[in-house]
Length: 246
Image (cartoon, rainbow, N blue to C red; front, side, top):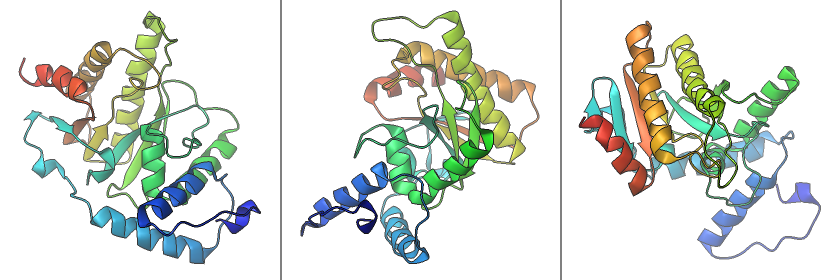
C-alpha cells in the first residue's frame, strides 16, 4: 500500500502509530486493484483485531421492547446480520485520515474491499446515491454479515430540517429495512443517521427513527427479529431510552 503512493513514508516503530498509519493509508486510498497477498495479511490483522474486541450479539442486549433494542457502543463490535452505515452520496467511505465519523470507522474496520465493492456498485449505477436510498454490501472483517449504506439528509449549520428533510430521513430507515427484509436478515443495527456532521437534530431524528421502524414492523411481513438502535453518545442514549420506557 505504501509502494502504491510513490512517495517516501517513514514507518514508525510504535505499534499504535503503525496502526494509525495503516488506517490513514486505507482512508485515502482510491478503489484500485490490490494484491491477494496484501489482502491476506490485512484480513488476518483486521479479523484478529475484531476477535480481540468484546463482541455483542442481540442475545446480550438487555434494553428492548418487542423487536426494538437499544444499545450504546461501537457499532463495529456488533455481531448481527447487518449494520447501517451513514454514508455520503459517493458511497465510497470517508477519505479524511482517521476521521471519527461512522463512515470512516466502518470502512477502516472492514478493510479496503469494502470501498472496492462500493465503487463497483457506483460504477454500475452511474450516478451518485440519492438521499433516502440504500445499498447493501459484504462486511468483510467486521463481525456483522452485511453493511447497508444509506445517505441521510444534510442540514445546513444553524438551520432546522424541512418537511422534505424529515421525509428523506424516514426513507433512509425504510430503504434499509426493505433491503434487510429482501436479504432475509434477522438482526439489523441502525446508527443515528444524519445526526453527526449532517446536523440533523438528535431528538427529532430519534422520533423519526423509532416511529418509522415501529410502523414498518407492524405493517410488513419481514424476516427481521431484532432491530437495534445503536447510539454512541450519552445524549443519544437518553433520548432513545425515553421510547423504551414510554
